[in-house]
Amino acid sequence: MRRFLFCLVAYILIVIQPLFGQSQVITEMGNALTEITGSFLDNPNHHSNTIKIYNLTSQCSSVLEEMYRQVPPSAESDFYRILNMKKIVKCLDFVTANIAGYTRGGIDAAEWESTFHPIMTGFGWTWRITHSTSDVIFYEYSKDDFRMVLAKNVRPKKDGEDYNANSISCYAWQPVYKEHYPFISRIVFGGNYQFVEYGDDEQQFKKITKVSSKRGNNF
Image (cartoon, rainbow, N blue to C red; front, side, top):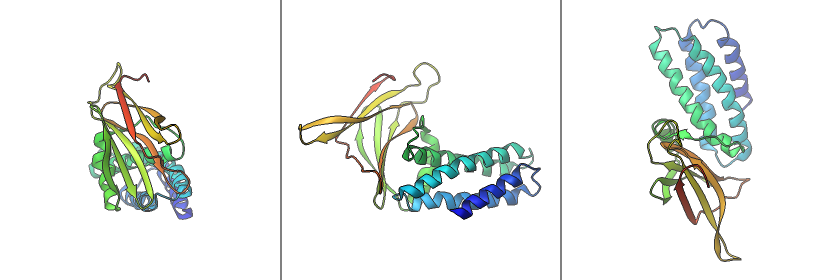
């Protein structure tokens, strides 16, 4: 992890100046991002490591923004390489920020499915549908002892008004009172995924026994 931090600081020092030989810098940044992403995807159950990865994502994002700004118009391949890395960092932040306790507004479904989902499965993650309503599908992703649940709003993306939002609630079984109780409620915008819950070596995973969903952003 110290090596990752050293690399990122070095990249920041490099990219704040005119980027001569930018393709090489982009390659090195890509290598560092591969290691950072792989560190989480290969060891998601270690909470302390996930927090370190979360802290690194903001540094990655800052460096990539500066690199993106300095791409010359003629370097089309560099433009798309940086754009792809920005998408990976955005997805990585979406997951690790929620685990670190910072709720995000969601992640674009098409971006997640085309960019991050294939990387996750390449690292041996599995996924399955656990629950669904007419508008929302709940997916459980797992790797070793780690599990997390994402909710996908299958309604199309929409600007303005209510953004095709759905209010969702997840329930767990309370054996003492023999009833389902809601333990988390979230807003999921149309065409987006929202983070629901997770379980790792510090956080107990709650088994969802029931879900509810209604259109609009009021619970």
